[in-house]
Amino acid sequence: MARLPDTSSLLRPPWSPGSGDRGWDRQNRRGGAAVTLLALIALAVAGVVAVPPSRPAGAAPAGARTGPHASFTGPSSPAYAGDAPDPDVLASGGTYYAFTTGTTQGNYLQALTSASPSGGWRPWTGGTGSSALPRPPAWETVNSQTSPGVFHVGGQWVMFYDASLAPSLEDSGHSCLSVATTTTLSPPQFTDPSTRPLYCGTPSDGGVLDPSPFVDPATGIPYRVWKSNDGGGSAAPSQIWAAQLSASGTAIVGAPTVLLTVDQAQLPWETTTDDPQMVMADGAYQLLFSGGNYQSTSYDEALTTCKGPLGPCDQPAGPLVSTYGTVYGPGGGTLFQATDGSWWLAFAAWSASCASYARPCGAVRELYTAPIDLSNGLSVACSPPAGGARGYRMTASDGGIFDFGNLPFCGSTGEIALAQPVVGMADTRDGGGYWTVARDGGVFAFGDAHFYGSTGNLALNQPIVGMAATPDGGGYWLVAADGGIFSFGDATFFGSMGGKPLNAPMVAGPSVGVTRTA
Image (cartoon, rainbow, N blue to C red; front, side, top):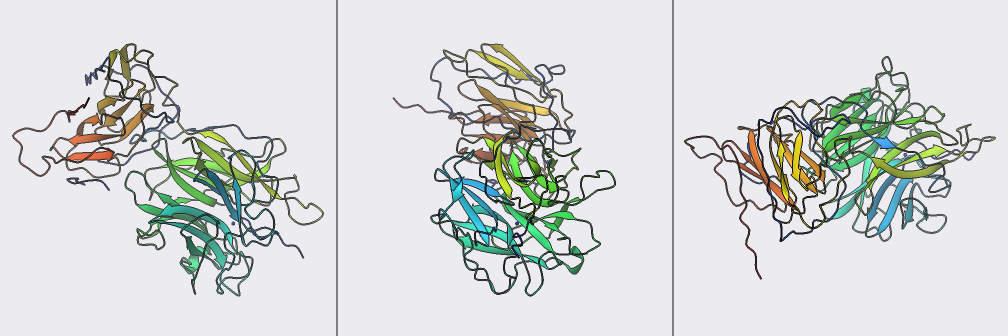
């Protein structure tokens, strides 16, 4: 978090409650263990349907090791050389928006816009008054608003942020969360009609701040993460929390749950946890946060994986991004997707090593953006075979992939530890990618196969035994041993045997019927 500088932050039925998706490490391999599952997926020579290209994706395997799982090269120059602390970046309608803690431009919470994630950023007004919150509620201490987090849910744009409860000073243990809404980002201004805070935590929390919203793509359920202890003197450790939100995304409906507690004894750099953010990227629940003192060059970004939107989350082995070159104290960051679906990391970093707004330093926290690879090393580059797909693939129970004919190898789970074996696979129609599914319903996507969701975070009555893709590759079905069907993406639910008596359990399927018209 960072304050204003002182010039005197649905699955379809029948579903039955496998274990959750998990974090993975970077390893992959071509081969597998002895082939215990012969999932031979033959591909048609003709009639190939083009599948829109996408980034490699995959669901995090249950019980896998957590290790380094991102590749990032920090940019040497800022995307915006003005002050932009605690940025939250998103793309909508071809425009990129960065919502930040307020600055000396007189904006409480700032809104920047650009046509590109890498540069061209400017205040949306072109100068002063570029506020995302032009009229803060009266219960908030003036200029104490920080760390906006914005998402689209329930037909509206929702912005969470924190502010001090008036007349308390900022960072005095009285930081609370509030929420503002708008129906459009043209202009990017929000309204907060509240007369009291949305959430202040408990007295022992020492204030709550740095909220960030998240929609779980596997379920469509919205959540919010935040941190406790604003540094106002509480002896409580800094913690990252999460709670389920209402369908409108504006109210907490679930019990707050701790995702991660600062562990300075084991991780000396982790003196606090600022600006947490959760995303599902490449099938894994990823938690980004900052550690250290933001008013120093020791501030940094960290990234780890979680078992689900309500955790628990593993401690990272170390920071992802620390001071480098003339980029001082990078932190307060956010992960966002560009218009082409690629993942980027944005953060703020001091413009000078003195790391202070105060004179004689006079530094500002500039905006940096760059692509980040969150593929965890499970996927490798591959392309659809030229002239059409001719061949087949097999998967082993450890997820090792064996390809024949002209089909490319696009990655596998063959060298990571899975808690549940792989039991099925399906190919994209152009042969340039494939999915595998584990017994608990965790789905792994490779090449041009998109990840559309899984049952990895549900408790299943019977295990998953197979999967099939839709003809256009825009979704897939999973089938359980009791005949229950789970559909994702554009896969339509037509019925199932779930809950009905079977003489024997299902062992494969579903098969897909396709009707073609001239």
